[in-house]
View 1 (spheres, rainbow, N blue to C red):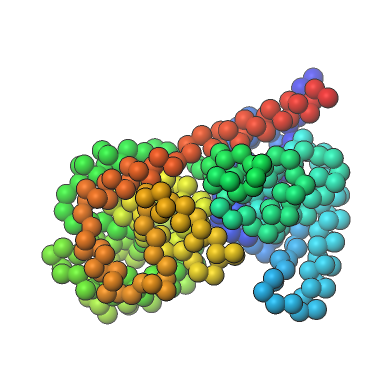
View 2: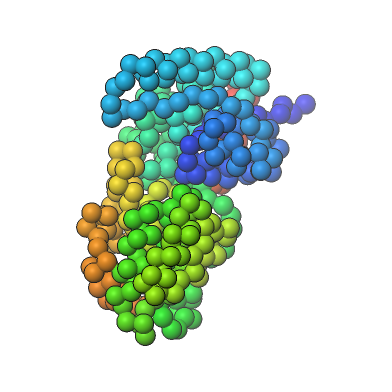
Length: 362
């Protein structure tokens, strides 16, 4: 009789941790794995994960603010961490997974660490060039480590970040750019909450470009800022398509000549897979400034542009945009695609299968 294949996936907090986990969960469920997810009921994983038919269990632990010490906050952190350890222990003992797979975020720490102490096989995946605090601590104990960038851990496997299959449908930048005429098309991505700096900067920069050569812009603002963004574009008399969310991000990316966006690991993975010229403006308050380091990796390899918020203003951005042409953008799109890892999802799912088989052979 074939034993059921079981896995616990633990991740949360941001889409960058959650989406690769969902991608792997969907792949494994197609191969008859039973998947449960451990996350925080107060975070976005609580409503994203169940939509994919994945059982969701909550451990409502909290992160520790490392920039300043407060005794009450520290004691609260310790209490919730111990409680999360206990809940994780009971869940693992009941479910008896073959593997526990952690994608980061502080909520992934208790389940992954307790699984390690209980003797279960644990896999870590880190999406950014600088690991998050949970993965950084876990990496000291966990044997199987994978990463979205090279040399994240000294003994990790660089496989790339898992992305959805539909992202790979738009993977021919040479053909896409060659067939285009007319004004350049720019896609501005502000993330689910929006990037207010970009919302203010880009409309003003575009207003400084002559109407005859001004790029056509689609600007994703997040729900909170959509009305104010429309007003800003109107104020500067710049035509733009302003939308709070993008349902088909792969299609939108492929339809534009240039993307201006933040530089989270998953955003970079999708852009590399599709092949689109990109100006990265890292979120300056990301933990350990990891977005800056992510973008530097590509800029130093001459496949993307990087500008920090502190160095940008409407005038220098407008001058930079005016200097672009479609041929230059096409070359960057072709080059950035060389850093795509289209097999990342399959390779990680296949490793889960191999590891499970090795467990059964013991």
